[in-house]
Image (cartoon, rainbow, N blue to C red):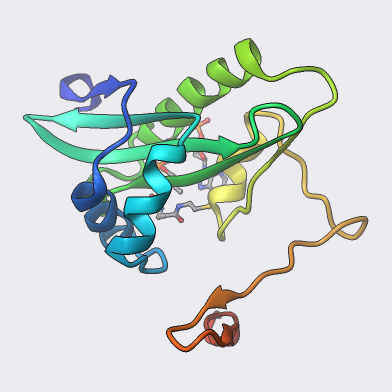
Length: 151
Ligand SMILES: CC(C)(COP(=O)(O)OP(=O)(O)OC[C@H]1O[C@@H](n2cnc3c(N)ncnc32)[C@H](O)[C@@H]1OP(=O)(O)O)[C@@H](O)C(=O)NCCC(=O)NCCS
């Protein structure tokens, strides 16, 4: 089934980006945030099937000391068929070619996605270091309620 799906070295536009994040059950971003964010992508890919974008992944950072893998998502109908691995393989190839010695390459793994990232050399940093975060709320408040709602 995966053979009809093409990996393209271009990140989706804002509309597809928001649609895929939502379909994959990821935290919603505003169109304003996405419009500001996407041009700052260092490297991104998308998966195309019959002209429709069904998956994506990208790398952001300062292009020297810090690189972060973000927005790895496959629409639910096509999950579990090796497409997340294809996206990660493309990002990993770019990292191997472009990231200088001493740089940090990081990501935040949601749930079982950590098993995918382990295959590309990522190791859990806890307890030496833990991820700390909040989401900016509409009134400037620091929202962490989504963490409490998690199973
Ligand atoms: C996470 C996600 C990107 C993975 O993509 P996918 O296409 O479903 O994954 P793949 O079919 O490519 O599987 C990737 C690998 O991880 C492994 N894997 C996945 N879940 C696993 C689990 N629970 N235990 C062990 N291995 C697991 C698979 O076996 C596979 O390994 P293989 O290639 O050696 O067989 C996709 O499920 C998704 O979009 N999820 C919702 C959004 C999300 O959580 N994104 C990640 C944010 S950090």
